[in-house]
Image (tube, rainbow over all chains, first blue to last red):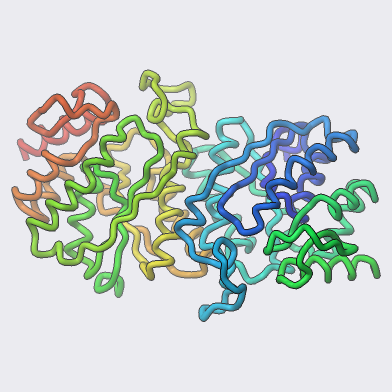
Length: 233
Length: 233
């Protein structure tokens, strides 16, 4: 894997998963850039968490020397063309098609393709994302088959070989906490708890032992359950 | 092909190729919607051509009864993250990688994925684009392998079967003029000549027998050459 000695771009939302992916990337690549998307998400507060996490990473870890440019991409158009509980003020529930109505069609496809366009220009061949099948919410654009098929399409479409790495694909949330601990110890899991954001409602007023959130939305419940399971590992 | 009796979404830039694709779609589908992208292209004038072509199509043809909603998507971000002669004021020439520097990395990947996101919401399963290998400018995102691989990735990522149809894939520009003639006769090729736009420079002052343009950029030369060849068919 020659790319390990080279450059990576991490899809970094400010959430728990992508924060752990960032630590994972910093241990494996000499140079790591980050990219985030402003798409009119209700939990837009996660974007405010990004620079705070990056600052903490620079301050706390030897391997943060490799932390390079951060790219924030305006994708408001995604909120405009979709009509979901993740971008509109509606109740999060299951839709008739068996998917939660928080599913934004093609969200990860667009994020990965835009990230690849940025990576192309920056001479980066490895893209890293926190997609996960294990604890996923049924989103088909988080599946490994989707991600790897898209890697093929993007590599063909840009005539350059890209690899899409998803270190959390087969981990549950408890294992993601454990991976964070392994990568950066308590100092890092404290960054994840304190500064990463998961809550779909954008709530940062209420504090739990696993971080801030409403405590009730699917993202909070997943995070809380994973944290509790990790405590008993 | 059950979709022939159903709904299609045409990637409609206002250029010659997508105008012919629109006519092709109107003959095959009961309902046809259109989508275009404003991405800071230098030849932004093509976007002004779109409503004029749509109005002409409604006025002239029986099959235009199927012409539905037009979607114009703001993709300025694509111009911002790329640095090419198609979106910046620089000379159009070959770059070191063997591609013209007018190549915007992933442009068609993004357009097709965004179109699929719109189609998902509109209950449309067939996307139609004017991509073409025969007369192409070396853009890898116009290749059939790329487009069909992306159709697989998008179908997986949205958990719904999409077909990406590219009726011009194996035609040269002369054959595209001939297809236009076959689809709508002289009334239609006149719409293509008068109202569709190809010139990368956005020139609509100079008039040639094949339409408006600078007459010198690669897009004008391709259009002129195709028109001349069609005249001798």
